[in-house]
Length: 272
Ligand SMILES: Nc1ncnc2c1ncn2[C@@H]1O[C@H](COP(=O)(O)OP(=O)(O)O)[C@@H](O)[C@H]1O
Ligand SMILES: [Mg+2]
Image (spheres, rainbow, N blue to C red):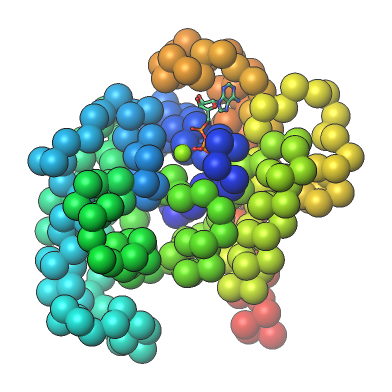
C-alpha cells in the first residue's frame, strides 16, 4: 500500500487534501495512517483532535528514535545513510509505532511530528533536526496494507531535504494562480532530481476545463481536481458534496494506477 506525501504552497489545500484522502480511504474500509508533519498541525485539528503537551509526538520521542537506530546525540543523521536500520512496521506495530500512532476513528490512525510544539520553537535544533526521525522511519517502514498519507510543511525545503525518500509518491496541491504554479514547478524540479514520482492535484477547481497556465506546467502530472466545497470547513465527510467525494476517490485511483506503472517502468529499466 502506498506512502504518499502531500506538498504545495501554503494555503493551497495540503491539509484539506490529506484529510480528504484519509477519509475517502477509511470510508472504503482501507486502514490509513495520517502523519502530521507541519508546524501548524492542521491535519490533527482537521481530524478532530487537539494538541496538548501530553500528545505523543515524534518530537518528544526523538531520543528514543536515536537509541533505536543507534545514533548517539551529537552524531549527524547523515551517518545513517550507509547503514542498514531496524525495520519499522504497521499492523503488526513495532514498539515505536505503537507508542506514537494515535487512534482517531475506525480505520484511521495519526502520527504527529509535533513541529509546532513550544519546545521545538524554543530549541536550537533546526526543523530538519526535529523531523529527521520521520525521514528514516518512512524509508524503513513496512506499512503492509495500511496507506500512509503525510501532510507537509509548505514549499520545497522538506522535499529538498529528501524527507520523503521512503515515499512512493509526492502529490503537490496546486491552484490556478501563478505563485501556486511556481511552487509546483520548484518542487517538481527537486522531486525529479531525487527520482521520486511527482504528481499534482488541482484544488479549488471551479472551471470545467483545466486552465491553460495550469495545463502547460502540470499537464500530464495532474491526477484530478477538488472543487470548491464550503462543506470542507465542516470536516464531516458525510456532509461533503458528493462531487468532492467522487473526485477524491478518483484522485486516489489515479495515484495508485500511476504509481504502479512508474514502479514497473523502473523495474523494467533495472532489469533491461
Ligand atoms: N476545495 C476547497 N473548498 C473549500 N475550502 C477549501 C478547499 N480547499 C481548501 N479550503 C480551505 O482553505 C483553507 C486552507 O486550506 P489548507 O488545506 O489548510 O491549506 P494548506 O494546508 O495548504 O496550508 C482551509 O480553511 C480549508 O478549509
Ligand atoms: Mg496545512
